[in-house]
Length: 354
Image (tube, rainbow, N blue to C red; front, side):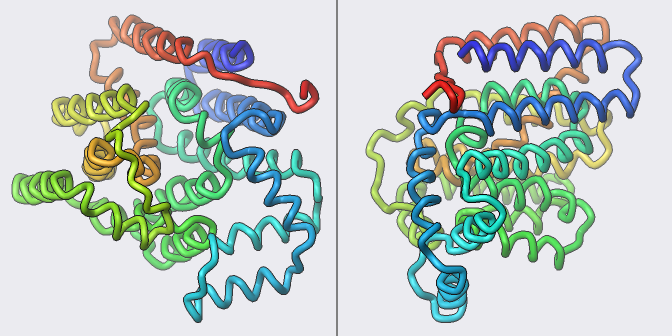
């Protein structure tokens, strides 16, 4: 855990030095670059013992060394054209292509970390009102999956959420669909983010919000019944987890609390932030996916694509506070998150320590 805490302390230090007093666009850029480098190093230097799926991905990486490129291309073709059974063949093709550059798994961990963190950093730089706070939120709430566990969904998220968000805001459907297709080949579940493109620009007027509320309520009631068809379509395991939310209670409560507070503060945030509708339409889907988790924990796979929005929303909360009180709110918020983070006592080990 010490390594994670040092990383967070350094983020706060660089945030204070570069962003606290007379922040400029250049200082903002330098902070984002430094923060990205820290997380790429932390993710890329981890041992195979860090992260529940890291060892499994190591095995599949080594097995891919004995599979030909033509075989992987054929799998992709059969998957797309003939509907053949294959588990995200685009990921296997990516691994095979990477092995022409290096067959070292540690190098591949760096590659996955770089793709995700650089994409996220650009997204934060362009869209976050407080980049340091956004990175702190990531470092406490989201790193455990995206930086130390998953490969396929991590890469798919980088594409569909962080890169795709730019094309959604610019209303460039063709480019977004290309990105969505690549992400789909890497991990089917990325398709759940596609609906956001079609509602992102809606204004939050009463008729639209009323219809959205009814849809959310209906999907929540039918949550467990919906899981089977969705799992089948997206390639999830169809095994039902009987404990509705298992160990995700704190995260679900946090997400719903953030969403509720965001809608309470909507008039002020809309005044402070041009284009707030993009965030709020994403929040509506975040509410839906979070409520579905209450019915079936396996919906966490879907919810992960949408929950990242709080990295942009929580900084907006701070800006809603009177300027003289912002440091107090900022510090208190970080302290609360750190308290829960320390309680989890996360494990970390560098690859040379194994």
